[in-house]
Amino acid sequence: MPRPGEVVVITGASGGIGRAAARRFGADGARVGLIARGRRGLESAAREVERAGGQALVLPLDVADDKQVEAAAASVEDALGPIDVWVNDAMVTVYAEFLDIEPEEFRRATEVTYLGMVWGTRAALKHMVPRDRGSIVQVCSAMSYRGIPLQSPYSGAKAACKNFTESVITELLHHKSKVRLSMIQLPGVNTTQFTWGRTRLPKQTMPVPPIYQPEIAADAIHHAAHHKRRQIYVGIPTVMNIVCERVAPWLLDHYLARTGFGSQMTDQDLDPRAHDNLFEPVDEDRGAHGPFDGQAHSVSPLYELAKRRGVVLAGLGAAVAGAAAATIRSGD
Ligand SMILES: NC(=O)c1ccc[n+]([C@@H]2O[C@H](COP(=O)([O-])OP(=O)(O)OC[C@H]3O[C@@H](n4cnc5c(N)ncnc54)[C@H](OP(=O)(O)O)[C@@H]3O)[C@@H](O)[C@H]2O)c1
Image 1 (cartoon, rainbow, N blue to C red):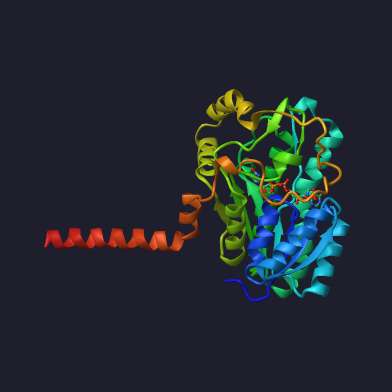
Image 2 (image 1 turned 120 degrees about the horizontal axis):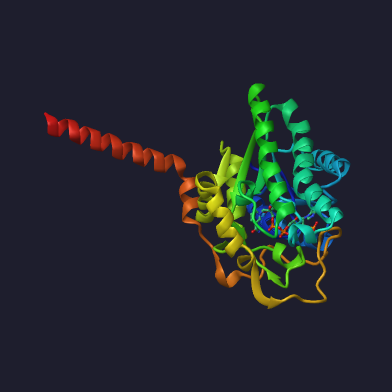
């Protein structure tokens, strides 16, 4: 359960899932350190946290810079107190075929999306390990398990995030540490990413349907932060993706080669005046949601079941015990 006034740090808090997560923790009365580059989005996020009942500290910085991330962790501890929860959410991407991506673009997407998570984890652990308490939530993706076309930097970074996290989990277990690391594996979510991600595609980008609203992801982050969950899968597509990758990866190769280009684009032409957030923030307040409210699901039944895993298992156990008792009685 959330501790009253707990201290939470969220990277990528100016838009998308990080912004929705900031509101979710704010509703508990949490004190939230908000990290991103765009000041306008961060300041609006801070107002939302405070309206929800929390307290906010705006920390404009680049997560690709380990020193800035460490300094931010120290500022949060000074201003708000010991960090209870750290959420690594920040990302950038490039939508293009691999050979259309310049090396500096690939490097930048990797440094923000992968190393940003590494530096966030390092900064958080430096404070949490000596206290032997705290919770880190890594916002991952179905693409941590399976790469898709037109997203090679992002797919590579997300797979690295998962393996990196598993490595640190095992080290913490080895030392019998009480510090916890969780991963949230997400499907396509209706976020600002699709309004400011760099693209070389001919049409506007979109998440692979079915699409979910960012509040579901925010709730999963909040749930993982307060329960002993190594991993939470959100949405049927995430589970299907992971199962198919395990059972028949070659089949998935062919399926994605056929569908994966079209499923990531709308019919809409690109706005020639649009700018992207790969190297610099767009620095507009775009909120948490992307342009797909009309088709995004506000509930994921699978996530609701995953959240109530204990109740579901207890129910199954009771059903099995009941059936066994009935069988024994009928054999009397
Ligand atoms: N949306 C999806 O379909 C989806 C699916 C699966 C997983 N996810 C995961 O969910 C997380 C959030 O994605 P999203 O869709 O919400 O993305 P988003 O809307 O683009 O938000 C990304 C956030 O990261 C921040 N950011 C970008 N570069 C940064 C940098 N160098 N330093 C600090 N902050 C930076 C952005 O703010 P500034 O630009 O202002 O810095 C923004 O606040 C990511 O980890 C992503 O992998 C998303």
